[in-house]
Structure formats: C-alpha cells, structure tokens
Image (cartoon, rainbow, N blue to C red; front, side, top):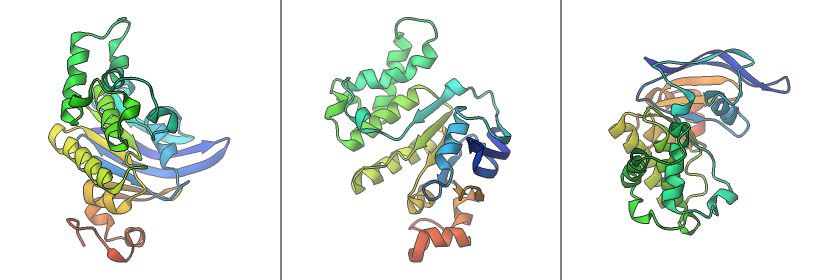
Length: 241
C-alpha cells in the first residue's frame, strides 16, 4: 500500500505557483530521491510532504496508517545547529519528543531506542561527547539517529550530505542505503547530486517547477533529462547504462 499518494498537486507562495503537475506514489520500502536545480520546487514539495504547506490544488494523501508524528525529518543543517551545545545522547533522544505525549520524562524505552539507533549509525561510542565537537560526517550520523528515533516508517532527508567532504559523503550515502535495505524504512531524500541519486536510490522524482520524471532510477538514466543531468559520463558504476 502507498504511504504517500500525490494527485495533480501544485504548491504556491503568495499566489505564485512554485511547482505543479505532481503525480506520484511512494510505496513502503521505497528509496526516493527528489532531484532538480535550485528553485525547482524540491524544498517546497518536502514542506508539503511534512504537512507544513497545503497544496494550492490537488491532494497529498497518506496511507497505511502513517501519521505526521511518525515521519522522521533531517533538515539541512545550519551553522547554529552545528554549534549546538548538547551531548550526542541528548540530541539523539530528543527525537522521541513527539512519541512522549504528556509524559514529563523520557522512558526506559525512549532511552533504549536512542541507544539502539546510535549503535546502528555507528555513533554509540560518542554518546557523551559534545555535539559541537564532532566532525561534519559524525554530526550527520547523530542527526540521522535522532530522526530514526521518531519513526519506524518514513524518513525525509533534505540534502543530508551538504557540506561534507567526499569520503564522508560516500560513507553517509552508504549508511542511508543500508538503512533502506536492512530496516525497510521508506526514505525520501532531496539531493543535488544526481549521479549519486541514481546509484543509491530505487526511484527518482525530477522537478523543474513541475514533475518531468517519476520512476525507477534505471529508467531515469535512459531519459533525455537524465542524460542531460548526468552529463557525458552517463550512468554511474552499478547503474544501468
């Protein structure tokens, strides 16, 4: 069953349409990358998926009992966030806030979930460290652990590798791919890196202020728009050429 169904949706700011012609479904276990140039509507669509914006027209529907509080979200990191004065454990367990309800304190279950996700992301040994002292790659793993604490169904990731060095970028892409394969969590990720998107994701949604492609990554690399964005090198290693 589809977790998200988008039908003829469009979004606008102050009456000006930013993106339209959106028709796609996200199934349980999909790994969808949303690609396109700056200003093409990617972040606007992400806000729509999070329920922070309502469509100007059309609909975005959730299925399989998915609730807004069951979506883990990793936004683009700001300079202020990178300098956040808290321990790694405090940052990660804060992802349980929406699940806590009216309870004033974290439960034993909350703490165990936080520890389990830190172990899954390889940052358990950093749990007492200050978040601001970590490398960029370590910080993103911590924030991904936090997002996982909020969900067992869906993760929305907004440019998670932005600002990372090449090695940390590759490592984080591999971690996200492993999460998709090993946990079955549905992943929707915004990326400017089209080459890595088609290498790691199962589905591609390409926006140019409208939907110009939606479908399997292997099909995307055969399209004119896919070839144009991938450049002369064509499909990356491990993808269809």
